[in-house]
Amino acid sequence: MNAADRPPPTHFIRQIVEQDLARGKHTRIVTRFPPEPNGYLHIGHAKSICLNFGLAQEFGGVCHLRFDDTNPAKEDLEYVEAIQRDVRWLGFDWGDKLFHASDYFGQLYDYAVHLIEAGKAYVCSLSADDIRAYRGTLTEPGRDSPYRTRSVDENLDLFARMRAGEFPDGAHVLRAKIDMASPNLNLRDPVLYRIKHAPHPLTGNAWCIYPMYDYAHCVSDALEGITHSLCTLEFEDHRALYDWILDQLPVPCHPRQIEFSRLNLSYTVMSKRRLHELVEGGYVAGWDDPRLPTLSGLRRRGVPPGAIREFCARIGVTRKENVIDVAQLETCIREALEQDSPRALAVLRPLKVVIENYPAGDTEWLDAPRHPQRPELGSRRLPFGRELYIERDDFMPEPPRDFHRLAPGREVRLRFAYFIRCERVVTDPATGEVVELICSYDPATRGGSAPDGRKVKGTIHWVDAKHALPAEVRLYDRLFAVPDPTGHDDYLALRNPHSLEVLHGCLLEPALADADGTVQFERLGYFTPDPDSRPGAPVWNRTVSLRDTWAKLAARG
Image 1 (cartoon, rainbow, N blue to C red):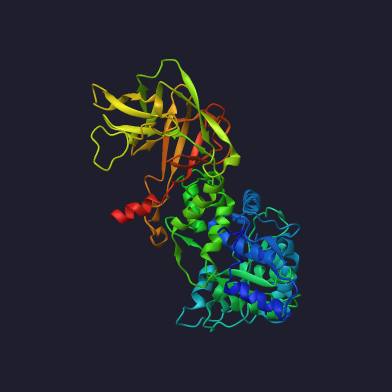
Image 2: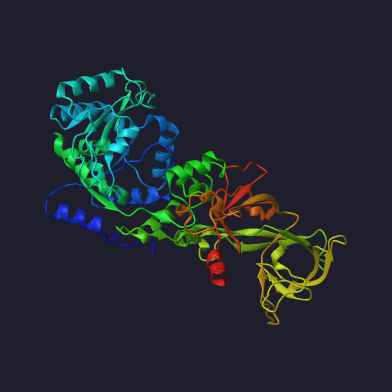
């Protein structure tokens, strides 16, 4: 069952929304997805996107897309455009509800003045290091800043001069005046504003002070009329600050913050900082490298957005932190691709076969279905001639008993074609490597069955040498060799050395000449054309294998 066919998932946030609507607390729910434009979205963000947009769709509400653009030193319009592209690709649309925290810079400033006038905020001139030292620890209370007792007039004057650009970065900050002895460190006079002389991608040089996330986020929620502010568990301790700020201000509403567990995926890293390190350090080929968990990387790899939505539906929404096995994602990808991907023959590591009893120069065309369960997709034509290529792994000169493919004196079935028998093996005199197989075929077995009823145990794929299309194929695998690289400071040393294998000289059936979507290379996996492809020089990425080979390796120990 896919996500479109099953009833909406029941989880604690959905139950809260249902209860709020049932008792009339809200007549329409309003959610938001609030990314920072300082990197590309990854599959962890997909969980939040599906949750926020999904709830809004289910209950006839609306979901806003709001960029938390409060740190201009790390933000870029490239990320803004990439985020919008990824959300749309995932299947969601915010309509006319596109916002930026910078839209509210004026209102945020005015509210900060309101806090100062109410004696709830003050300008602090401690250095960043001293602020940390005064903050205390989990077991020791903090100490009041020596600037905490500044008068309202002095604070208003200093804050206005901060706004006017009179002071350098770090000279002053605006802090909330709450409780330096609070057991919640987030309530120990948190910073609300800092000086940062950096141009903003949207507001230019209009501002040189910028609000902190905890302040801008809750006020933006209130100004937009958000009903349920959904965030991950690391913000649970920040909820008290979220509520405190809104309780002090004449905001139009007070949204409810609800936390859920973030998506952690095995064999990868989800930290934006570490993703930046991978990209900027050249360990991967950009934000859309198919080995990354970024949505742009998954898209380039050929993962359909429906598979990601189905994956998010299956893992559910809870408050329990855990690591999801990437095999669950790969299963969803296979299931989605199985339904729609046409089939094709491709040989990645070619071994030449000469059928000595087939007429030289002849070519015949065989019919093969594009999809075994979807006759409406039609068929394609496969050329067959005297010289073919098979997969090198489908031949062994001295096979074990459980090897059911081609070997000297052994007969196999060529997919959609004939039975062939290996008569002789040609090897390189210098190296002993097998370079060519001399085979015979049985003309009576066209289509893959023998009229005399004899059976063969092996069926292998092939391509015709004369008509085969050369291609480059990139075999992508898991980026890290251990299930949980996030728990290691030296995580870069744990990268999987086989996460990318580039194969040149691969051969594809001619029907793939104009392919522009994901195809199942029979017996090999699902593959997608890469943007690096050029006319006459196709490049294909492996999206996912046909089965979880890592599970097999683990079972073998």
